[in-house]
View 1 (cartoon, rainbow, N blue to C red):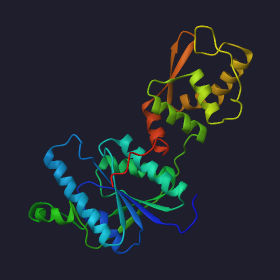
View 2 (view 1 turned 90 degrees about the horizontal axis):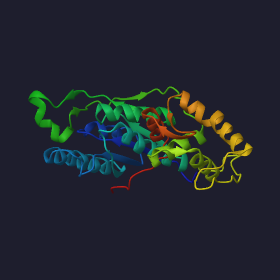
View 3 (view 1 turned 60 degrees about the vertical axis):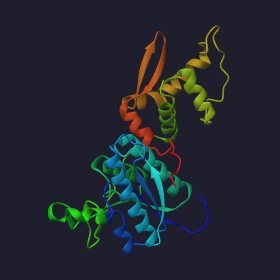
View 4 (view 1 turned 30 degrees about the vertical axis):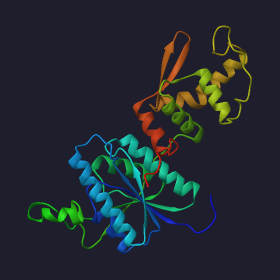
Length: 278
């Protein structure tokens, strides 16, 4: 954790909204804000891309005028996993690495993204909040959308979302799931032993002999002990939780992530961030 003053940092996944993103800062202090939006190369119509660009620009300008420094970050807002990955990575970086206070706006984006950011907030113990709309830019008021977004906020009511604890696997298991997520093709027992040795898990700093004409380790009492330990402490609990599955190839197996495992890997905050857009 860095030393110095704690900053108040907001994460704002942004759809077609303006008021819901900037009105809270007229009453509540903040130092910085990450504005998450779809990339300009997203598979959307040019009209939709231009529309989102307008809202993003208005929000960044509004934040700046209120003394909040915005950082633009691109994210696939229509993909829950990508939203989980980006928001969780930001929370880990700002809260755990830098020691800052983090708040997440769950109301300035679409429903799928809102689900993702709420889950990420609960897992990492930061405050998610909902900005209540007083009316909407529809019908006779549709012309107001360009200045307010889809929701028109007048009173600026901000409702905190009260967290409940979501249990995550232990840290080595999370690191293992993240490694599986990155590799895509799964991991053999040798890959797993090597990875646990790399991240310095106790008991894996041993040298095992490899089989001839193979990259796998040769069966031995030491190999069996290590395999039993891996099954008991990591693979069996993760498999029982539904986060991994085994693919058998003769006597050997390959471990793959399940869809649920992908969610845990992304929400861990360890998969990483794309390059900052601004």
